[in-house]
Image (cartoon, rainbow, N blue to C red; front, side, top):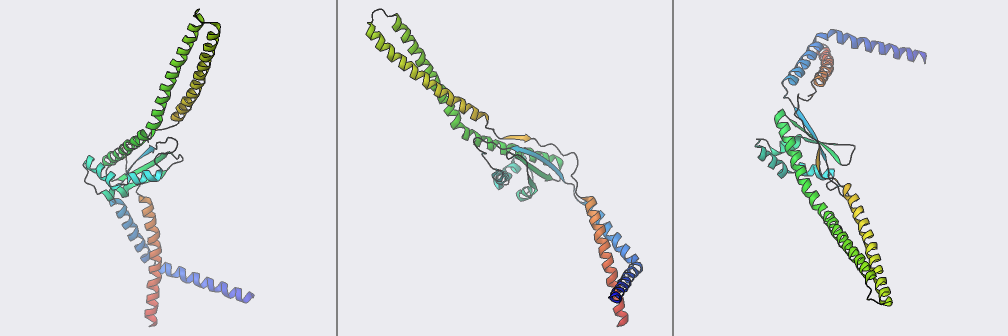
Length: 278
């Protein structure tokens, strides 16, 4: 057992020495490949076009529930007709599909907020497009909100009118009761009968106005919780190009160059050994 372990240990030492010997022998080749790939990575990073990013946050409208979901918002913004109309209005010579691919959506902690990012090669164009997309979507959203809220606004107006009518009925009943009390021509029995009728009528009006006011208060509280579509965070002009990963590209190039150089070194060594043996 001990002999086998000693044999394996010696084998590993031999393999390591062979490995280091090849690396030392082919170090010029390894370094050449390494620096060539690093240089290419630097050139690619240097000549890569600048990319600017503008972002904005949309607040989605809701009444009793959200009016347009985040998924529906994505579909609306990425709609070809929506994109084409914006490009036409801004008179930008850009392909619709190119712009669609440059738009990215980021979820937020709030179910009512959606962040939209836009990447362009020009900072001014990036800002114009972001402004146009945000404004156009919110404009369409406000129309949906207005149509959806109109029923509740109309109902509130009906309740206001009904309360005004009942208040007039209450005032009329109170005036009739006052007149009845002062009327000396009525018999006691007639006065009592009419008085009871008017009191019951007044009580009915008062109960009715309580119900109507409660309904109106509930509806007002409900409407206070609704929210129209808005631009929660407006886009701003990018001041500098976003990080295009230059350092990462160079580091990746260095790693690939080192790995490729080592593999090439062992391949050359193997090829030369086979050539000698052949």
